[in-house]
Image 1: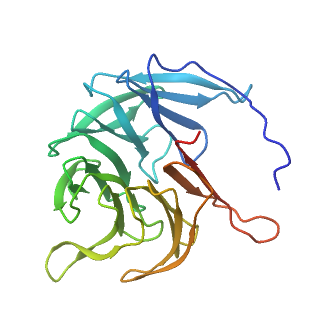
Image 2: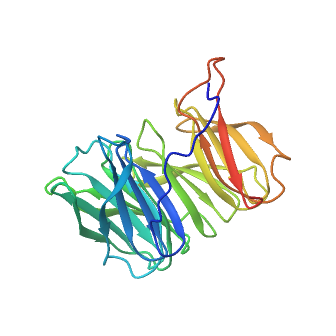
Length: 276
């Protein structure tokens, strides 16, 4: 149980709004991105335990960088980071040496701002979503390590797609949209394409974000309607378990499910919104 939270470090990292940050799974690296069109990689000093600027990534995007995602299963020295931007592109960056990251592939196709980017748990797929209402899925080329090609364009949402995230234990993608719904997508060998397995309905306004519990059996979503909902999700169906109201008096923009349970074997869910 956490008795006290202490601020350990503050850094002035960008010259404009910081939109997103992402911990590397090892906990030794933190990536930040901003409206200044820069990505910065911060590495933990083994002696002081403080995070120091390791590298600045620039030149790949011409507008605000909105989302970051680390590729899983990569070793230090060959890390891969994905970024998405309001310039309608996504970029893959590869670590070269100890400190340098270089852009090695631009993922294009969206017609408008790319709101979110997410790696699958296997690292074989990377998904992007956009204001153009579409989701693009890119697959790693069997012949070229870390080279990705589009294998599917998903167009089931009727409005902006705000957020995408893969199921933690299988290559099934979930998306959230301005059309008040979430959708679950899977690859079907019989038709050789990605299909919507089901649409989750229950919110009365934009679904801004969602997260999974550690098992992947449960999903929590948050919305402009000032509520958050816990769902039981499977590969083919879903069930609404509970809807929580009156914890926020304005839109809820983000939600996170703790990977650890408490000493009383209870789960923790954190939410944040425009009520500050």
